[in-house]
Length: 260
Image (cartoon, rainbow, N blue to C red; front, side, top):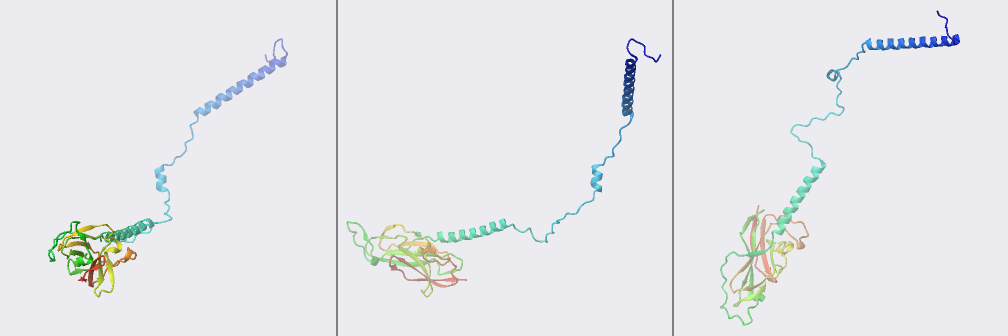
């Protein structure tokens, strides 16, 4: 029964039997391993709940705690904010200074005035009014009130009158006229309408005998120097005088007080 029977040598049949047996054993092992893998339950891996881990994890202290602010004090300004604040203050100061300077412009004053007595008029020459000589005009200085408080802006006036008997023509150019504030003793020149503003403009006028022509400026109450080269300062309380001129015709002084 076990002996191979056939036309081939016996060794051939034994090898065939051996291969068949090995194949059968391998198939049985594979089936057994697959069955064991399917029947064995998978191992469970313990999981950690995020919420529980977060609650049980130790809390670390902030290595750089924020210092408590002092009651009643706000946050310190940054360098940029401080620079902006300083620049804003400087701008406001410069604007105030410029406003006080540019507003001191001498302008025509149309305040009604009484006529000044003059000699009887003479006929106007056929060629028209003659030029006004210095002897034909008078120049006066006025102030709106004899007393002002420091910080107020008094109105100063220059008044020109033709005191001759005939109309005449005079150039009342802004550069030819001037309003000046002096100390009460007339020693110190404190302010002039020509220092910072009052540009030159041709202003030929026919002056009628006895009819005043006035110009006015609101003085800021500060000092000035020719060319506005120095810092202007507030004129303190005291006694002062204002004088005016047209070319080299100078008025009499008009005194006034600045009270504290």
